[in-house]
Length: 199
Image 1: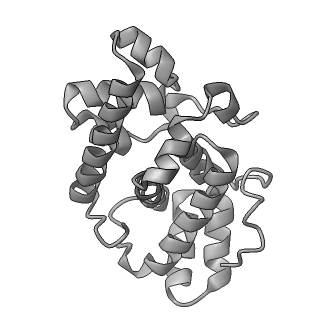
Image 2: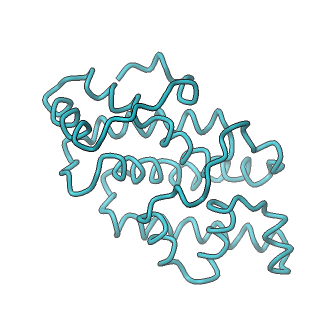
């Protein structure tokens, strides 16, 4: 897949082809048709970007993670068996890429120190119900305390300050909980979706 469009994830129009079309394109891409994978990327790029933005809270970082997710998906395409839809598989790949990046201390500190209003990208808000059931099931496997804060932060778009105030705990304590929650969520995803080869 060409990287010339790495900064155009949000500007392009998402295609509306159905699952049958995805299956055909996946089969062609597995046979070496790079154009077929480019069509898949164009079709799903908006959803991938929106999910990446939920994790990264920064438009530039979300674009980078979206690009990385598609590159990783291209490299791992032979491992896609079709047990789920291509879009669900891309959610898994994207989430694993973002969680890996968030696990790096420097990037995590940048995100956690960023004011909430600066992390909002115009027009990028997505209703939390758009997150697939598979992601919600993974979050539900976390301890209740961690599931609650992950849901509030990533799915319901609450700021650290709002969550800490609601739970009546220091912001520093919340950040420590969130760090542990991310690590546990990553392990759950590895087990639930067999993502060891994608992380």
